[in-house]
Image 1 (cartoon, rainbow, N blue to C red):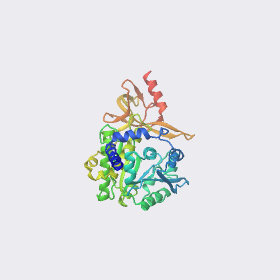
Image 2 (image 1 turned 90 degrees about the vertical axis):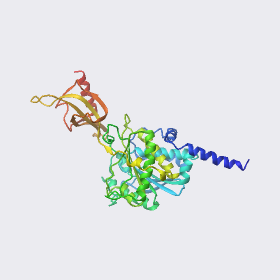
Image 3 (image 1 turned 120 degrees about the horizontal axis):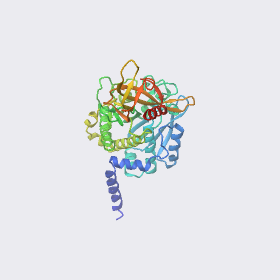
Image 4 (image 1 turned 180 degrees about the vertical axis):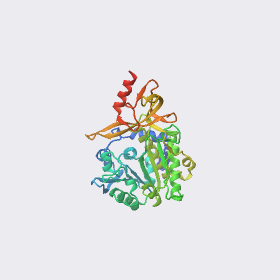
Length: 409
């Protein structure tokens, strides 16, 4: 019996591993291991470190300072697993694009707290994971796109003028990962092609040249993207798109692909009623864990690449708010007209540094082909040029007060 026990353990582990590989399983893992203290997409490096540092004593990962930002903040590389295939993940090149950063923190919690889970064992045995969750901590401190030097580091892969860009290039060159994941947030108003459905996640195997040539490396990136598409279509069906594949010679994704690392871009868009992007944080967790398992088990090699290549590209058919069917009287010299009014909400800093939601009127006319996160029936409301004006911005609170006043007029 004592000779049979190791065999039974091996068979049981293999059976569990085979069972635990669906998006539903990954979603259940996320629900158990997500960091509950993350509830906002606005956080800085110190907060992120508070979520990660308590895990260090568990010994599943190592944390190494690989460089500093322009303002002297440490940039950390987390390494876990000891498999032969290396994967590099980098997030928050743009300081105001934190969705995947949250998912990486959740993944570190999963691997650290349940390293004997069949999925964790498969990943950690076959892969070496290299994670830089926040490569632009100065931008994250301000919740702004650019670095402290006002440079978009994702347009600095050629010149390497910023310390953050030089660091990312050096890590890629030092470890020579087989796969790379370039993690971003895109405009939450992108749509699935020309439909009215929001683009929740956009994928891309970036081009290496203007001709958009394929080689073995880019082909592998497309295969992994196809596996991610399969997983996401179970979780957010019909809301996955393809990002613009025009070659950008200054961008990191395009260059990392060219330098020999099969690169997958994941862009987190928007979701209904989820301004803090918690649903898309979960989608990233599922996408990344499914990609890890696909690479660890080499299942991507049998992927149907058409699942990725037939994804519709991002469209731009969405506003935050549309006031539908309003009567607009621009002046006393012309007749009133029925219009829809498209409004986007942008956040601007006030004099105290606080972010204030501002409502900007970006379009007027027939917007029947456009979608919105919020549709407002204004068929019994009349506006004039004092109320609404193209390109005019007002505090969101002022817009709400205007609508209430008009409804009760």
